[in-house]
Length: 362
View 1 (tube, helix red, strand yellow):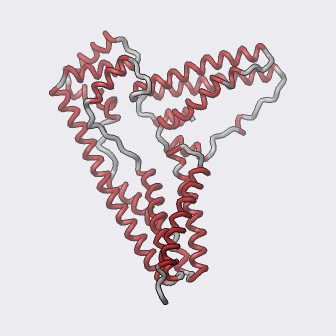
View 2 (cartoon, one colour):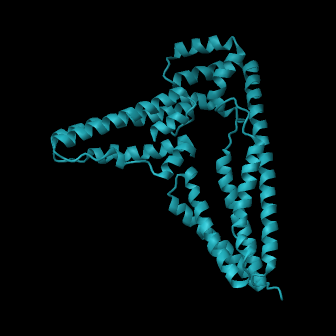
View 3 (cartoon, helix red, strand yellow):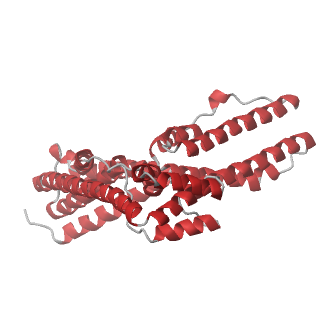
């Protein structure tokens, strides 16, 4: 998991830290296996321990900082509990104590890396000074990827049109009106989500471009403060203050170079944002597909069979869409799926009940 995350990191220094931790974890495994051999115990087959499909998808798609935070929490359990337990064998306990000390070092490395990347819960004096400077530059903005947008689009389309289908089914007893209402509801939902995603992504790009231009203006209008920011960033990476100040002074002589070095640190990159068309297509198509799930049974069925089939298919889809959110929230897939299913039951039940109350005559 560490190696997969390191491959995604654009910051080479942070990636090096994570790869070093991965190499150390490999060393821990080798030392534990050696103790098992000495004790005459079987060695587990490496091929039998693999990342699950969900873990592989999270390593590829979920926010890197979120995954690392989850892994840090697991490391903390090893440090404070697992490696402190006595095995009854002094030599083995000594190996585990060595590993525990190294794991504590890993935890500190990850914590320092995140502090350098963003404000942490307990900032150092250098970080506190940097936070105060950045706090005055409240114009920074960040965005999300189109993949998560597609999943949430499917979620919105499914939930909204399931409510329409359930309500019209209750009102008409599952007549052909359900297909008509559901189909146009799906089309409207897809188009609405597509246009919304396009405008949002274009706004995101405009904000990103404005951030870069604003940072360029800050460098021109407040060069001393920008130099101090650069120096503080370097200090957080482990460079002593005198050297950091010299580097900042050298960069200050070339505003374009200062922006290229300082921009990625402060803004997270100099990119102008995502692709509005790509976001619109992903959101629109995913919303339409999600919305069509409760509608499809009514192409072939009417009355109670259509209503029951649509409900079953829709609730299964609710579970699958909810489980897919675990790629980004890092919750357990089944709890996210059940939560979404429960939401579908509530939406469908309420709208179906309202439809029964407002039942339309034949």
